[in-house]
Image (cartoon, rainbow, N blue to C red; front, side, top):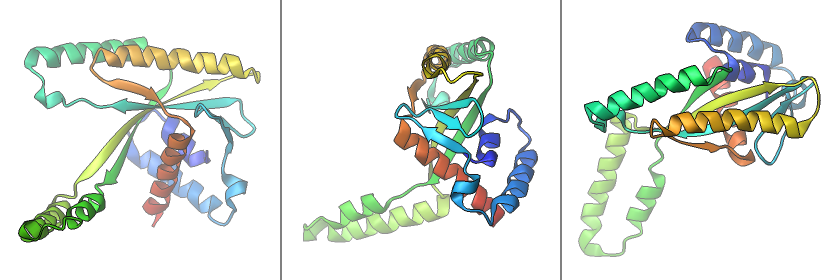
Length: 208
C-alpha cells in the first residue's frame, strides 16, 4: 500500500483538507517513480491481510452491508443508535470507515433490454432505455460500498498471532454491528486489491 493510501485508511480525522494536502504532497514526490519503488505493500495473503514493507504493520479490510435507516420505525431507530453507541465504546482500537462510491453502470441492463426479439415491445424497450439513460445522467445515480479498516502492529513476524489479533477485532466489530442490523464480512485478496485500486485512482483523479 502506498503511503498516501495508508494515511486515508488509518487517519481518524474528519478534516478532508488535511487528507487532501497529504495526498497532494506525496503524489508529487512519487509521480516520477515506478510502481515498485513507491508501492508500500510487501504482500497481500489469501485471507486479504496486507503487510507493509519494512514495517510490522498489518491491515485488514472488512465490508459492511448497510441498512436503510429511514425505513425503520422510531423504536427500531432508537435500538440501532443504542447498539451503535455500544459499538463505538466496545471497539477501543484504531479503525477507519471508508465509503467507496461508484457511478451506477447501467450497460448490462441496457444490453439485456436490447436482446429482446419481440417486435411488439421494441418501442417500449427503446423508450425504457432512453428513460434509464436520462435518469442516470440527471440524478448521477451511484452505488456505495462501506468498509471498516483495522490494523495491527507487531514487533515479531508471528503471522499466526497477528491473524489471531486481527480476527479478534473483526469478531468484535461483527458482533456489535450485527446488533445494528449490519452484516460484516472479511474482504479476501481479490476484493482488497479492488479497494486499493479505487483509493489509488481517487488520489490521481483528485490531483488532476
